[in-house]
Length: 123
Image (tube, rainbow, N blue to C red):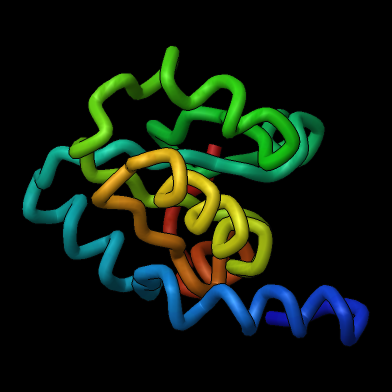
């Protein structure tokens, strides 16, 4: 799903991946089918979220998620799935939330692009 991301950006994303949990699009689809309770957080830019997003997702852009997460999701044990366009920004955000004490954060690899490619609904 990678666009033309710079090598340095990909290097930093790849360096955090071993430190975080990731899931695939179908894992999120399965969790929803089982009616599991979790927070689905879109970390893309506000304009991206406004254009289209996964149903029931909340928006906390990567630029402000560390500032706003405690107000939006105060429970540091709450299950949280983060997504962005392809799974890169959400991986970086996942590490930061872990460092803030959030214990159940997962980044959805493939992101919104993978969600759409899998034929899942968007709003």
